[in-house]
Length: 198
Image (spheres, rainbow, N blue to C red):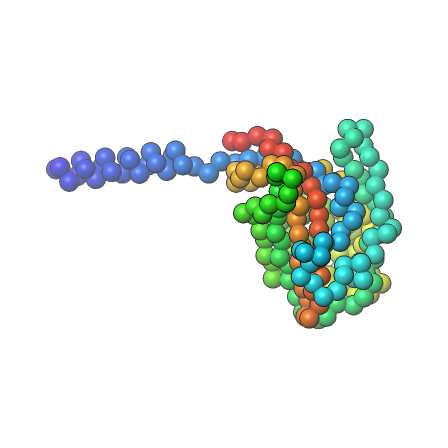
């Protein structure tokens, strides 16, 4: 009888622990920075052998500032300047936060074996942006001369139901892309605000 009571007490303790340690769901507000138009990585970050400006032409992109003075609406063309080697496009993303006047690494990173599959996956963080590109243009991998057209694509998104992580602040994502023997680097700047935690 004592073992049975001890087992019940132990089970109740485990259930209480599980209830108290539930993963919190957080909503984040993400705002892409206008500095993102300058996608070139610094030399110290760039592990590539081909500059991104030799692969992509984003000179046709422009943005309009919304009334809230934070939201930007991008429009224009992104053009491929060269053919990519055959095979999947790999992607490694490392995220840094601006603290104490320097970019410090965060525990956030992503790795995808196939960028093409990741771009159309509705569970990926960037899906709200890429779903705005016309389906007929979503060719991946793209060939030389292919054009992606952006039409009023917002830099302002709310990402819901994410695990709670202390990530709010000014962030920088250093994105390393590789296909065959081609390697390049892209940098993106954005701000993250914690909106709510459930």
